[in-house]
Length: 346
Image (cartoon, rainbow, N blue to C red; front, side, top):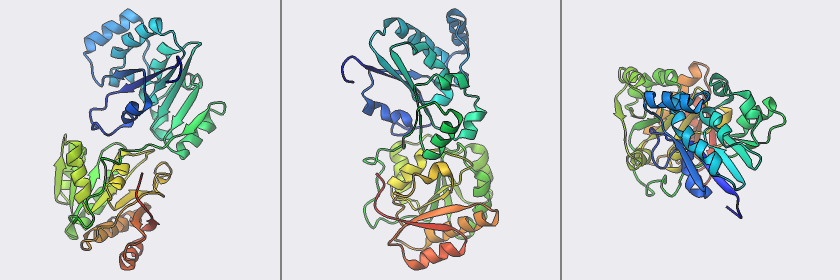
């Protein structure tokens, strides 16, 4: 940072994200002078003792993330930090309450929010803490507009999420893709839509690879279609799945930015996803590269789009402008909206 200004990042450890995933992946690029990483778990007895000793409140959402175990570090920094500073709370939904420990006349507090507005309401983020922010960052323009409407005097910025495209990259040109559909993640996923599509996908000879999907939805899907469940895999193994799957499926019940979507696009996957305002702004520049080997991905995409249309859902499929017209026509017959895109995602 220039001069005496200090940047402090308050983040949380995300055990379900790999080293290259999650918003905290930005921290190495920010040049932060200090990083306070809130653990995801902590001994309940120790946390209770710390709470009583420091007379701390209960920041909404922080109990799950063990936020009180980081409060002592923040408390000590209050006394030692003299230089002007910017405090960036990387996950505002869970950690905004902790920002009060670093507030002061020479400090500016910024928070990033990842969830769609309906989800923020469900988490009961304290209005007063938001109003005291010097700036708020949302990850898509739709969410930013929601924050501006609710807090007219607050400086709100839309900042797009990104992924490491040096790592999440396409396979060599001409590489063959399998007759498989890849599903990654569980948060805000619409598994009911996927369950509805599973029998048709199965009849087309397509199977599912599930990464980070809970046991309950995976078990239900396994009754309808061949399923391979991957648990605790490395980033390298996930990249291999992105590079070899015939189609990446992202049925959503709500979302702002989505790491899995950006990773899949960067790896050159054909993508079928639910059309949501928070996702839409990430897609016009996407390169959802069509599999050149066989018609498996086209059949799978058409099947999912057909089931989605039958239950009143709108799905959008992204293919390159060079895709054969016959494949595009097939998708349109099944009620999908097809967007043609250029270039590579970066």
